[in-house]
Length: 163
Image 1 (tube, rainbow, N blue to C red):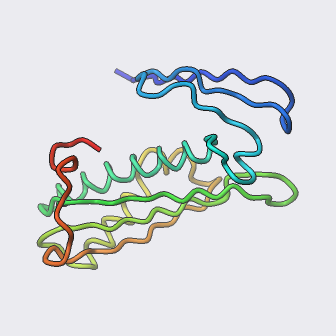
Image 2 (cartoon, helix red, strand yellow):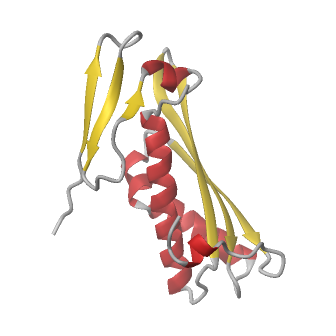
Image 3 (tube, rainbow, N blue to C red):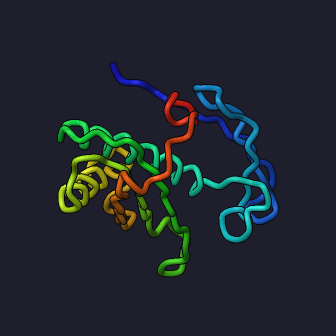
């Protein structure tokens, strides 16, 4: 059965001087997030943007896809630290989400760099958020395999599945 997720936003005013508020998301884990055009095109000043939310969605989706591929390979990750950098830029006279760069540092015992890179690239190509934006946004991945013997210990929150 398909899962449907929702988000509600209330906007007041025009684009440049107006502002909005994300008032509700299905999970209820956050609400009342202020948004504005200025937060998209200059300093955020404590407000979020669709691009920041897209970055969060892309980083979390990629981390799940990469984790699944590493597990299927028989080399589950001890830790994946994923950052998505989404760029909102003027292109051909208009604004658009231009790029999403996925940066992952992974501690994965028993894997070689070539396999790590191949699986990261496959996760980048096939996570559902990548599929949703492919063809409109340039997507890339920068994968760094961290030597388990030099990696910092996992935080207690990470070992308990809490971030």
